[in-house]
Image (cartoon, rainbow over all chains, first blue to last red; front, side, top):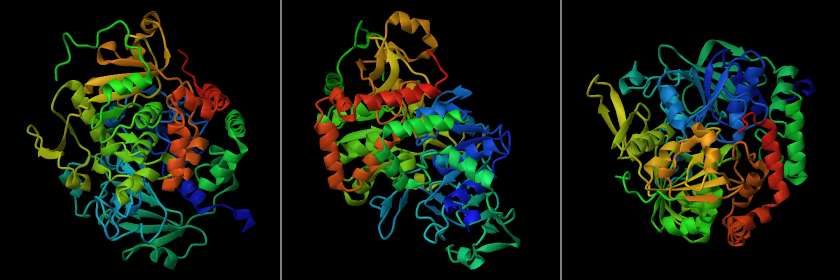
Length: 285
Length: 311
């Protein structure tokens, strides 16, 4: 396995990166979605423009953002404007693709980022999540939506506790148009184990591609409904060394995919070491 | 709302201290909005509100991390009307979770919106019209729990749209890169909803990195996002957004936030943090001492390596 050493999160970022096309305009959230967008720009989509809800259009990324309003979100931007203006442009149909995460998803791609109710309710839930943010707006009006989330049975559910962001709603023909939604809805779900697309006729999610070393049973067992599988089920190639190197250079201190443990490590090294690392990596580009 | 003729916002100098501005304009139960967008939020103002012990605040805002997690953890907020309460790429907001899930220290009432909807609420407030229309939130459960959103069929073409009422908070606290003492506030980088928040609020407090002359404002008048007639108070608060970033001035302090997040995972840890960084500091200068000036200068150095916009 030494020659294929990568984490499930890295595989998820690399697979998401392939969902962007060159010259597209992408409404991207922070975290792994942004890493995937930056990676796409370094490979097959150098002219991809990234848009942030804070009001940043077309930045070039030499350092990582941790919030959509970090000053870094504005680095080398083509246009810096207002939040309401960017959402207006979304509603005008200027943005081709949005990338969203979620805590729960159902077979028609409806997303929950508001609360996990558990045995309780909306007002006093088991877990309060951040809420829609711009997620509902992106899911409503972006040309198409790519969802990134870990494949776990409590996340892939028959019914989401709270429908924060519309997918294909109840899956009926033209449910989105009838509701008044402008975008075409979800196009792909990229997880840490497999890639899912949506059937054009039924609007239901199906398994399209397994990642190396993952079995069909494992995936079926992680989905809370009777999962449809593509007739020609594919297996994704291993990430290349080039892809992994590029990916790791985007967040050199590994503060996002490495999580709290990595952040703890660099915090102990101190602010000076952190600043030097970020500048060294940026200068290398 | 009528704020035009004879308004009290015309004066040669509105400069005051942060303590004075918070004392003068923010009362228990006030409705507030903060500028910025998880970046350029005036975190120092949240600290001062906590020090002065304000209670039962209603916060109307788009997306917040540090400001709301601190205010809610310190027991200052009764109600939130907004779109996002998390902690960015670092995780969920620990005090928000404790408050909503367990009622610690008090239960936060939440009214969920989307960011575009909140943006339209402030645009309506700034236009002085009662509502705006949006194509967001249709067919979602946000409508189910939020009775203020009305879905109607557009009277002209018949398609469904959602109507959202104007937001008119009592106070907006907005951090600008610079302002003059009259209150002309210049902002660059992204703008969030600040131009509209300043116009929608009854009172606007501008905090800023630097106070400059009116002559200097006139040299770059396109940058004046908020003109003086919207403004009640001007306060110089350098590094007022730390640990968040301020475009062109200093970068996000991800390591500090990471440590805050760890510490706040338990209620005791958060209370210790509150003692160390807020109650233990008599004002913002004291907080800067506690954080350390070399650290703040490093964040400034980092920011300036990436910034192409020179004012």
